[in-house]
Length: 164
Length: 260
Image (tube, rainbow over all chains, first blue to last red; front, side):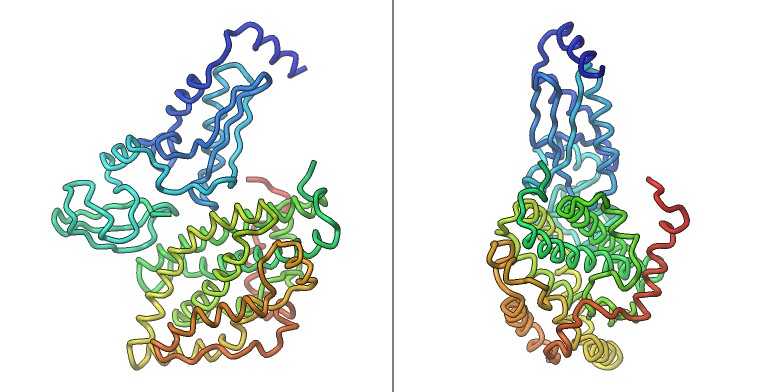
């Protein structure tokens, strides 16, 4: 029954373009850092608009990230607006790396007070004042994907994405 | 077509035990680390140990899911993780030691992380593709664990008096069980023949010793001896683990079959 309903929807709607799906994905925020979308963070590996469904392959930033179920549900909900069946899956086929965060994503993170990916103080500049006079307080932070730093110039603590 | 259907029965059994060993190791060390949440010696370490625990439990969950697919017997990841008696767990004896003090925790983490790192390296080119893919991802996260624990090992080893004495005590207690991380698994030759892992456990242990020897020499620490009873590397669990098991299964037992 569900399939025939879907077929009717497909027949009634104009063909769906992959670019429209990607644009919709760019509106799905990361639940822990809502200024950045799943596209900004490089989590979208593949989008395929098939005859039967919209398929999306996502890469988890961290294997044990507790936000994965929320992200999957948010992507499914946003894409359901197209009126097609949606198949959203996380995979480890390709490892997500912090290099996948887009240039635009890095700028959004910086504006929100998160330094782009870095492993040591030498890789990281203060997102507030731009100084490179920073110290690492903790390799680990409030979420799995972030480390804690301190800026000696403007005396502000900040977080940086882990370089993985 | 399931993953399991592609595997010969003998390989499937041997692979299941490898996945179970890895998953249980990550599960038990993750829960041990989480015992520091709220009571670590520094606030920064409270954050660090909690985040490390979250990483390890995430790795355990991914490995249990893969194991559930390989076994294909209807038990899901949560059922495998929680619905066993203590004797049914297959983690190595190194992780049977109680949490102990901070030096115990750092010694255990260093010994485990270095040996686990060698095991992960031996699986990066695994012929079992889903495992190779997962390991590629896990190794990237483990780099942070290694940096953290190595910094602490050096700190404790270089401060004479109580820090160094406690570290030496911890290594004396845990050293004889360190090599159990890489203790031989049943039917290991078939895993090597099938290209699932790139070397037998004796070779992995030699690689591990070669890797840690320069660190132990630099810090003037005694190298871990050979495992005293390698055949019992993953059985005969301790009272400390039976206590931990009661803790980690408590929520599951309150409401069996609950979903999140």
